Length: 207
Image 1 (spheres, rainbow, N blue to C red):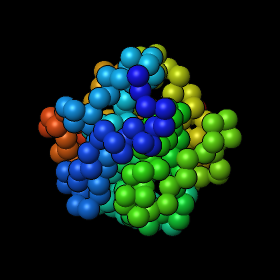
Image 2: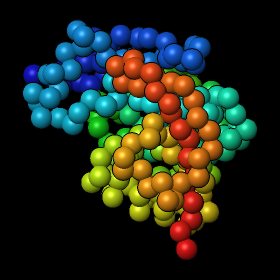
Image 3: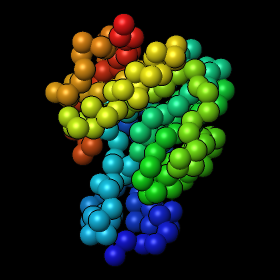
Image 4: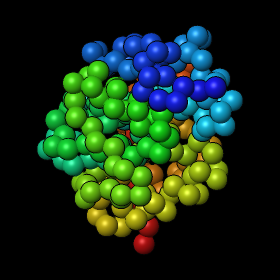
C-alpha cells in the first residue's frame, strides 16, 4: 500500500539529486528502491512527477538561458509534474509562478521541490481555476493522442486570449506541428537518463 501522506512518502522513498545542466536545481527523484510500484498497486495515476522529462527539461533550460522570457511575468507551469519548469522559472526572475497539477503526489512533490530550491511556487486548489497569467509553459503534454486532444483546446483558449504559450517536447508523434513554431532546442536527458533533444515551441493562434 502507498503511504497515506504523499509528502512523507516522497521524503522517505525518493532521493534528492541535482538536475543535469541546471546547477543548483535539485529535485526529489525516483531510483530503483523508490517503491513507486506501491502507488500503482493503490490504483493511483502513474508517478510522472518522480521523473525529469525531456520537454520539461527543455523549457527549464530555455528560461534559464533566456531569463528575459519570464522575468517580471506571471507564469503558469501547466501539467507541472515535479515542478521543474516552475522552479526554473522562479529562479529566472518571474514575478509570480503557479504550477497546475492534479495528482496529489505531484502537488506534494512541487511543494517539497520548491522548498528545496528556496523559491515560491503556488499550486491552485483543485477546481479553483488559475489566476491571470502572462505566459503558460507546457512540458510533455502531448505524450498520448487522447491526452493531446484534451489539452490542445485548453492551450488554444489561452493563446486566443493573448497569452503566450510555450510547449516543450522531444518530438513525439502526437505534437500538433502545424500549430507550433520551433524556437529553440537543447541537449537534455529524458526519464531514465537517456539523451534527448528537447525542443521549445510557441503555440500559434488559429484563425
